[in-house]
Length: 253
Image 1 (cartoon, helix red, strand yellow):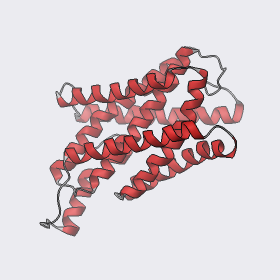
Image 2 (spheres, one colour):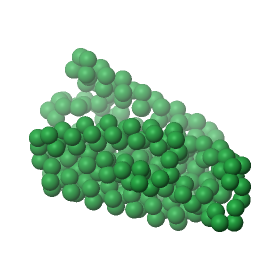
Image 3 (cartoon, helix red, strand yellow):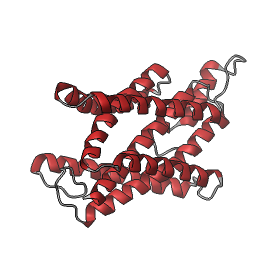
């Protein structure tokens, strides 16, 4: 089973490579689910702490521009590098959490100034969805079957491609279709539907992520890969947070 989250794909291939290169050395401790949980919580805590610091200290000027542009571009670059290189270095992964924390802090404060209370609503919604999907997976109510996996991967590719296409159209022509980027733009029914679909797809990807982590444990990945899996979980949580925040901003208008 492969996760729809590009960060957590091909864990089985990685495990086979590790066994071929390193063998079953007695000193090599295998990754556990608890290892992933602890590191995921640590990364969330780091991201939250940096976001809080950025919220209270960055209010405008060059620092604000750096926080938004640097956090966006730097975060995207690190996602690609860590994913393709399968980096397990906690320092590099922590750098991603820091950059995203800065971006989340300054952007969330902007939303909060426009719509008081929206940030805590988005945070609660994100954690609620994540925990809910964890319960559904643990109870095997939703299972990562091959058909389910193909559906979620196809849906994820679809919403990402459509989102980027919509953003390019906005840059070129100023028209807003699937997503509304301006603070005062009118919101029709299409952006609402697209936001709900994005949230649904983001939630379902956690089922595949849980299955991928479980498989990595079963294949005996080294303990350091717990950082890599935790990084994948953080990427999914941040994606879901942005989608919920966007939907709430539509509703609050």
